[in-house]
Amino acid sequence: MKNEKPSVLLISVDALKPEFVLEQERRGVKLPNIEKYFVQGGSIARKGMRSVFPTFTYPCHQSMITGVCPATHGIYNNGIFDPTGEHLGAWHWFANRQVKTLWEGAKEAGYVSASVAFPTSVGAKGDYIAPEFWWDGSELDSLFLDAVSKPQGLIASMEEEIGRYAGGLDLTEAGDKQRFQAAMWMLEHKLAGHLPEQPFFMSAYFASFDETAHQMGVYSREAAHSLEKIDEMLGRLIEKAHELTDDNIVVCVASDHGTIDNHHNISPNTLLREAGLIETDAAGHVTDWKAWSQRAGGMSEIRLNDEKDQEAAALLAEIMKGLASDPESGILEVLDREGAVKRGGFPLARYVLVAKKGYEIRDNVNGPYCTEKVYQKAQHGYSEEFEEMRASFMLEGAGIEKGHELSEMKLIDVAPTLAAIMGFILPDAEGKNCLK
Image (cartoon, rainbow, N blue to C red):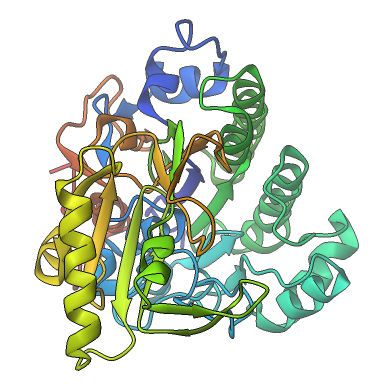
């Protein structure tokens, strides 16, 4: 018996700002597939979505797939908090264990659940999970990925057809080409066979627009080129999904956050080191710490090593007071733990620093506190209240009204909206179904 439920395809385009979708000529970009399927043929959140706190890739993606804020799902940053580097640069690659994800909810609702390269998907509870994970960029990445894929052996089977899936943390246009080929392979070789009796939910991801903007600037021709290449792949992926499902599909294209050009770097850890709260060896490597600031782009989370260390707490409080009162510090807000949790993030922080626009926060412990020499030309992680940090949201397909404007959306609305389309409710969701 044919299943009448629509399949659902969620595609994340990292850092895609609404203005690139709705003001293409002004921004010097041509996105014919986004124009055709979504601007003309679907529904769009024209004012964008309010992202989460922080507006950083991994917390955002887990919020997108769960419908809850980082303080609830537990992924507070891209990287694991690691002042001394004992975790060797590890990121929060893993799906959370606190709340239900769309992958798990869809599977329970009778969908074939799949993912390709979606951030925070290692260990996701689905049928076909090709996660994002890297180690050193060598063939070891493929071996590790194959071991943690679901089912085990998925990556080896895929790579026989498309070549290397991993390639380390490859966020370039070449990396996106491989992510696209992997998504197409998943549709054709794993999901098509379940249709029409069983619909699918699949998440996919494109990273190169964000990465090129980091390196060249938000409004650079190079970033526009990366976005145009993504649009080409989006068109082919959407066309294939419609073909396989006989048009019984809803496609959602969303982003995790916006992005903004930088003009300064600031390094709070230099102040902590000067105050004796961080110790380093002769080479400048951290050997011990009483307080540490870990960056999240335009924010940083500051923790105490020992919450009962009153002397360290007092020193840290004075430094925070100084940053908050200094108009030249580049700091917009200094939040305590309660203030951070109220915004939805960093429940383990003693303080959270929120930078002014264009002041990216770094983890440096040596050198000047503030410099005009920037590591990246563009960044996110800034306040979720900034217009520049708003994310994109678009829907098209079965039952989606053309030309309908979705208003007052938040990133945490994505998961409950897609769950509603698939006919189930995410019990933990803090967002809402935007189609109601």
